[in-house]
Amino acid sequence: MKETKSPLTQTETVAFYGGSFGGALPMILLFVTLAVLSVLGYSSGKSFWAAAFLSLMVGFLLIKDKRQYQQILIDGLSDQSLAMVLLTFFVSGVMSVLLTIGGLCDGLVYLAVATHVPAAILPLCIFFLCVLVSSSTGTTSGTVAAATPVLLPLAVTLGCDPALVMGAIISGGYFGDNLAPVSDTTIASAATQECEIIDVVRSRFKYSVIAGAISAVLFLWQGFRTTQPITHAEALDPSSLLGLVLLVCPVLLVTMMLKGKNFIYALMFNTILAALLCLVTGKLSFSLFFDAEGVVAQGLGNCMNAAVLCMLIFMVIQILKVSGVFARISAVAVAKCRTYKQAEGIVGFLAMLGAAMMGGGTYSILLSGGLARNLLKNFQVARTRGANLLDGLACGTAGLLPYGGAVLYAVSCAAATGMVGSEFTAFSFIPYNYHCMLLIAVYWISIIVGFGKKFEKDEAR
Image (cartoon, rainbow, N blue to C red; front, side):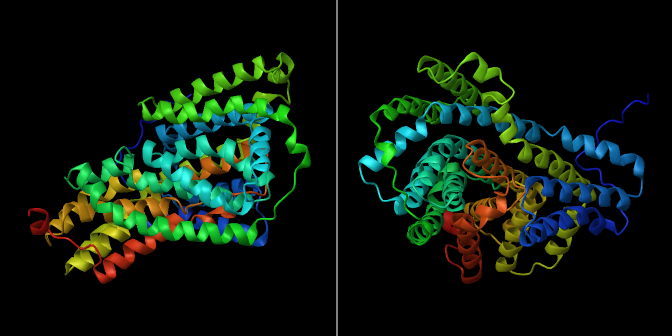
């Protein structure tokens, strides 16, 4: 058996028929095919597998040296981010099933019915709660992991639209991902633009509040428009309150992340805790844990659609990385730059392009941050301004990508609750991700009209 070649370096580009565009074509094809399939009603996750595999076949046909293709796909599958995504899929999938069989949803429904909470305001309340969690932890995925197993079953059981609820959860998650001082994107944007994190957060606050406030109004409106309240007479059984003991798991998950524990540490710890609590309360048995249709099998099975799609997408993204298309577009854009507004527009475009290429905001910021700093420096644009444009537009774009890491994770978490079917995909709730849409709108309006513009001399005062 021949020895596998060493991984391609980040700076090495691969030749494709059609040049850089040929290397970008598999990703373009994937995005278009996913959209077309959704419109035509092929909304199953397995249909999306076929779309991603088609992109891989096209990539093979377009690459000039076919011998390099094996290593490109291997590099895509060996990406550490993919390993992290799959690990969170599997662990959170099992935890979600444990919370369900433990009766947490039943206990919350009992409280909601007994206290006459209007179901129509739940999407707004969920958005605000997720804003608080994400602003404290700085992570969209952590917010989705903590909120979805608890709040999605509660809201859907009371008559809310699951797509609207997931839109509220991921919108709230991206609020803090963009603004929190402990967020990866905040740290990356501040570092690449050579400024202090506290200055970035302070200057970014107004943009986040504008987008968040409008999002809140939209969630309130959609809540009243789409919710069909369901009466649950059986929910008034006081014995269901026992399930509330499991509420300690998502609360402790957030607390541990606030204390600096890494995500997997906190997630695994609370999955074990949920299993122990289910054992103590008599909800979990030996057979229920090990059975072919048991807790673990169901938890892993619920997230398998998203996991396979994620692996295929990371291979497509790797093709894009080695194509050199980003460097080509960047060089053309910089050559055309003549004014500070054009410079800001180019930075915004590169932030969105990088997020679309990489499927995430942090990588986009790291990819285009150095170029953005040098470009804006030529026009004396304030460093915090550059950090805000990079972060706001990268986060906004990442949250609207059907193949984005946090978005796929949200699909997996929703499926793990058992409250949605296989037809529920990223396209189901992306139209309700108001905060990400509004981040993009607010920052582009800011670039066009000059709202919030600031120069180096202003920061020096």
